[in-house]
Image (cartoon, rainbow, N blue to C red):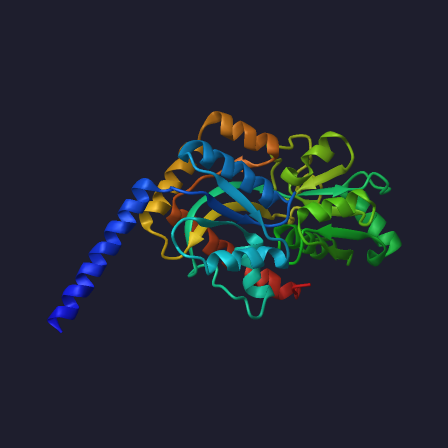
Length: 323
């Protein structure tokens, strides 16, 4: 028995030493950052973050796109990965909040199976319409829906449970018009569907739609916040557009598998915090359509729990299902 205790003690000390060493030397090889579909907001935030970490830590942070099921496919991969800091996930409302209510047999626990590193950015979605839509603001869009009937006016989202979807469902509830929902496998495909005329309007991140907004290829009616968004100062707030209950926050963060050594989590957190607090990084993110919002791991954990408390009742009341 005494021999077994000694062996266990030595093993524990060895494990602790390896964890400390891994934190000091990490990363010694490329790191995989898993996210959703190519061209989506999560993809662009992943590439932005990966580039910053590559520059600061001297190893390649490589984006791995795993589309479908609202981002839960890639998220499950990370949940089941070795907790060594070499497989990370870009977390968002779809993967770590709404998925809990949408998927009956979600293969991971968004809180217990992950080690929060830091929030990366916060923002809004923007209601954008195809140029052919005979409406130039939210109230005219509502009038169009009433005149034609909701099913005759289609809106696109980045997929079931994404903040793009939740914002659209909130819009339906606020207006009382059952516009036709067309879910896509990511924000990139949703934007393509809008540009092709497959849908009439969509709720998308300014990060996803910035090029089309700048080129006037889509019309922007409102952002999903009560105040104007600094990244789109010319677009009316939800309050100004006459839909003050349309308040839906967009956010993205970085997470590792649960039990990842704290030394690695804190090293990543320090690098993100220092990088994302730099004026040039803040400016670059704002041009993308996002506000830099680095946090401590503890604050990110508390934020996700608060988002779960906020959105779970809304999803259940609206009867939103995975599509």
